[in-house]
Length: 313
Image 1: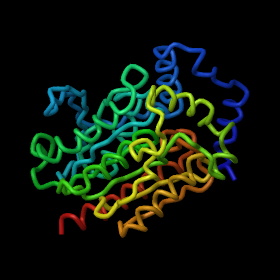
Image 2 (image 1 turned 60 degrees about the horizontal axis):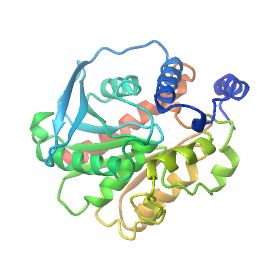
Image 3 (image 1 turned 180 degrees about the vertical axis):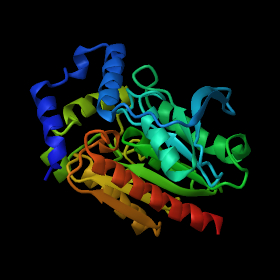
Image 4 (image 1 turned 90 degrees about the vertical axis):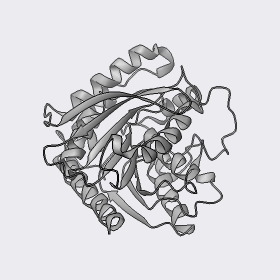
């Protein structure tokens, strides 16, 4: 059952449906997405120190990043973060409020990554960006935090998919990642689970729109069984980083998130599952509407601390 505080938000969204993405220019869509997420998150802007930097990867490619350091920074850990947005939308600015909140909540530094988006840069560009950023940050940790700080990798929605894939692809490279945090991740374009059927329309994330964005993301790449596209197809996740998987009850992506948690457990990976009752996809950005969302964020921060303390022991 949807949280009562979300009902007017969902009602307004159903009464004023967003146009199908095929009818909009990608620039218009990105501007509308930014306007939507900023209107729902509220006016609170937590004071943290930020620095924007271009990171030059080993292949010469440059990615924009934003490092968040809170006043209560204790150098305890670095969180490498990849935003959501269906592989086509989102930016450092659209998810700025979330990064600030998580930074203040945990006292950890957060390094957000502006990875390449479709349709300009179709698959596997975003996967390559995430994988190379894992390697770069793990080998240049002192540029962003204490050289012995545990490294946490975290992403929401499409960013959660990138984190899951990059964690699996680099699991045998000795990157010493303390944990992977997957926040309502999308884990493939098929979208045929029970939760997808129940919540695929009218609950903020419209699966017809997501299917379209997957087609933009994949371009001419047609193999949905490739685990870089559908992480549930990985045949071996042994030695992948310990995981926290956060799912929302009324999210069409809920069941695939739970399935991936089960797959990790099958290969002996420690997993903690957080299930947010009554919540919808993207709820962590709705703290101004649903105060309980911030309580769940606090709980997530506490779970991340557990992994950091274990890594530091």
